Length: 279
Image (cartoon, rainbow, N blue to C red; front, side, top):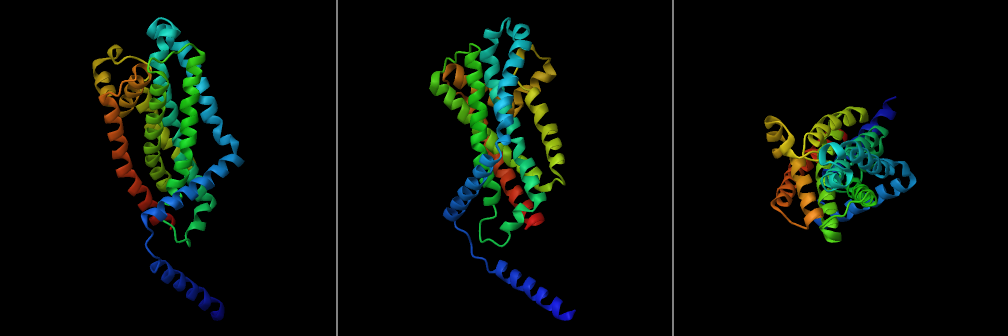
């Protein structure tokens, strides 16, 4: 029995020495490894097309549903409601899509996928950031389909192609930054179901208690005060300014600043929690 235990202990000690002697990964190597992980995630998406169901169906469903239900009540008719609603739907769709990042991360951890990366001399952030880079494609598809649906319903953005593309890019950047928060949730939650529940509890109130679907002026004073400081409202207003008027307003700067703050806070937290619990 002792002859079987000794090699196992020696193997563990050898692995610990190898990990301790692991060389520092440079910034360029980290970037390359992140892109490699992103390519791996894209190949996984190709084999699992159901991952695109939410980004393909949600924009169509939400755009049509909100337009025909609230268009007459809020703006008098659907056509007048579209310039207000479409940028709001873009923000909501991208932000709700990024919730899947934490859920999929937790599922991969439960299946032992990330255990394979333990012995690899790669940057610890690469397995986390790689799938998030791949998810940029999903965010872009969701935002683009929302605008396309709006165009089919009669929406004519005054900002032209440039304004629409800028609004899509801003929404994608915001979704990517917020995905870091859900990635952190994915590293600390006990199950994928818990990640989804926590994410919905955080994001849905922020999305619906914003100016995405109704003008702030129509809200009670106490609620309007919260809506004005809600980060989602800044994103929605910035997207409206870009898509409807091609105007790079101060709301764009506030939105980008909020994205930077989220990344600075939650990217290190995600890597630290990932290393502590799973490495």
